[in-house]
Length: 87
Length: 242
Image (cartoon, helix red, strand yellow):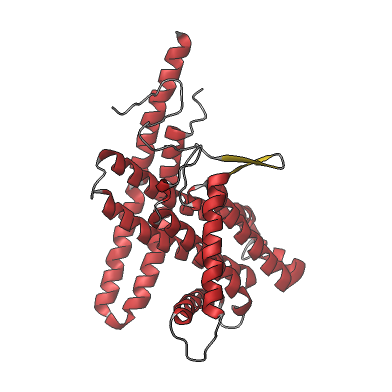
């Protein structure tokens, strides 16, 4: 019975942790990517012939910021599917 | 109808997604993930056949398949040239373009080809890059290459860059040698696995039409991640060479 409670406690904690992990991890990069896109649009508006280069740099920077959210997602996925704490 | 069991066993959604179930092969005492090998061999065969067809009857003014392959060659040359610089980029073009084409082929093979039609005894066929082992192998290759490039160019003087511009940054520079392959591998792995899981879960919920935008997003994200991986590999090599 004690084992049952411990297992369900660990599982419940893992689910909450997974939700928090991905939720919080999406905030910072979301703000950062919005600002980067805004600056890129401003750059294109100011100098339309640089559009290709601006777009290339923007995509590269977006992928970097995306990686930070992905780290949070990896933690969430491993808590849900490859949890080292459940038996 | 859909069975969730949280209590004592790993989480399985019984109508389709199996995360962490692999088709194990025992080769010389080592257990490897067979489903990754199968799709990887397919991608490798496809790339070899495409290159052989593209270079079989070379013409000065390219047309047809040769033209198509030259587009990819120019694209990867641009990546290497932009990052490494005009004078040193040429020896690195094969490596960078292999990385780009292989990762692009793996991601798109996982997204486009209907692997579900082939049934494996255990596990399922999907993009090889959804396995953390594949992406870690690729990023360790990149790590090895930039070390090799730096050591070949500067000999043991390569290790001076750990104390530049100030020796206080020594721990950070050493840490960077670990975080570079880590972030490379996790970025690629996370993007591919996240897209596959999203498509799988959406397909379980609404099998028609709704997963399509996510699948198209997966194609786009797969190609962007291939570009990012090869660009970053070229950037790390450039950093080691300067």
